[in-house]
Length: 271
Image (tube, rainbow, N blue to C red; front, top):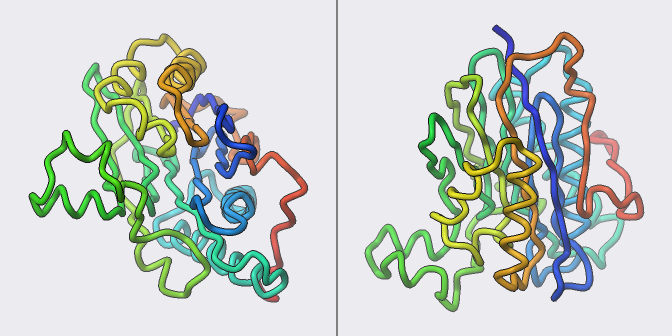
């Protein structure tokens, strides 16, 4: 029984940022967020570049879903795009982005993740975080140096250990998970503009309290704004459903930096 996604995509700069460095995208076959790493030149360009390269790989796929190796290859090409753009535009040196997405197959969802954006799964009323943050705070938590109550206010909570920055070693740090998929599952992909400002139990409560993806996405963004989030906020909510005959991975919607054509073009991977 083929499955697909019904999605809602939201990406806002927020009241404290002059531009949106996040990108988000969704289609019946996939949903993702990418957070241009703050403090680096061209964070918006980095997230734009990766968003468009991965979307192009999905559009060019022969079948409805990409396998693990194909997903890794798509992310590796996107990462190489970043290096090519820096060679063409040296002022972008240092740009980087996180990437977290789900890709829907016949009976499983593949989760692709690097950085500190997150993926959550709500199933039968129970919700959990699926991804592990590639961050210094996560290491400190796992080592018992700090407790969970300290993490949201830790002075180095924004230090990420792995991301896509154009280095040839970056793709080796990408995590790909395979999770069985069931109609009725609800996924959330979110940048840290949401999760840094809303407690995780509140995020999960809002995720499950709305009837559809649009209501959940609106409630999450509104709650982040009410919490006076100082970062860009991007969320994609995706409900797993039985696929319609017309569903196609080519029906992509992009938001945030990825929706701004001025960021550039996807480069020829052979260049």
